[in-house]
Amino acid sequence: MTDTEDTEATQRIDVVVVGAGRMGQGIARAFLAAGMDVTLADVKETDEDRAPYRKAAEQQVLERLRADADSGRPPQLVVCDRESAVAQLADADVVFEAVPEVIDVKRDILSWVDAHVADDAVIASTTSTFLVTEIADLIDDPSRVLNAHWLNPADLMPLVEVSRSDRTDPAQVERMTGLLRRIGKIPVVCGPAAGYIVPRLQVLVMNEAARMVEEGVATATDIDLAVRAGLGTRFSVLGPLEFIDWGGGDILYYASRYLTAQLGDRFRAPSVVEDNMATHRRGLQDHTGFYEYDPESIAAYQAGRMREFEALLSLRGPALRAEPVLSERPVPPPDADR
Image 1 (cartoon, rainbow, N blue to C red):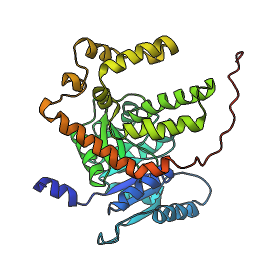
Image 2: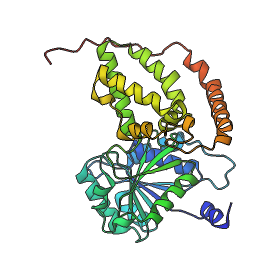
Image 3: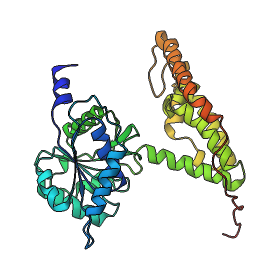
Image 4: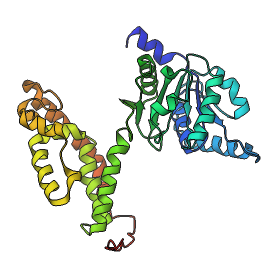
């Protein structure tokens, strides 16, 4: 570890999570589990007494906390209302906005945050609905704004998608990804595109799975088991683009043409797949595809990935072979007149 990395890993970072719902609680728990103090601000304005809600939120965060008992001073959680959060915002290095996905609510809260944080604080929305370009317009200085899309449950899922706009300062992106790595998360960076990475992929998969149930291709149980035992297991070791290279871009090329003819244009391959096919960039067999491969190290690379499969299946195998725990609801055939 370099001196710079050592300093970054030990320096105090003041984190404020604005919004005390499920996502906010999960983010707070992730920082606490990593031994870092965090403020969780309940900013919902109502005539009702919110003190019981804040107490319940605090209990829920702490009850599910899986902190290291030997980490030294226990991390501190402060759960406060909007008025008390002003002082916490003034000292914040990073603010995560986790309020409901309503643009007027976000506009109100982000304007309030912007008015009280220091000039060098990073402001990150956890939205999955609005692009970072839209969020940046709600802040006076868009260079410090980005989206940090956590997957639920936020404390358990490793991935956080960091979306930046052309106006986001690259140093702030590095600052955010470094902080996320510090608490054990795996950040990926993407541009301001609808659906980020994971939601865009999973919506396609979920809709196609539902379509197969509707068409009577297979039961929900068998489709889910096929994904858990096959697709999901495979893609947890080989990402989809790596898998194209592994199996060969020509396989995807011909499979896409067949499925397009049988099932429609939603299976048509993008231009990059056709271009790779035409220019002999089919993956491992050509030593180039979406990735570049050193011919001398391909065997070691393949052996390493196979060891990952073996390790994963040794843990997941018994659960996958267990009897299903859910009862299916019969799905009527699609109405031709609908």
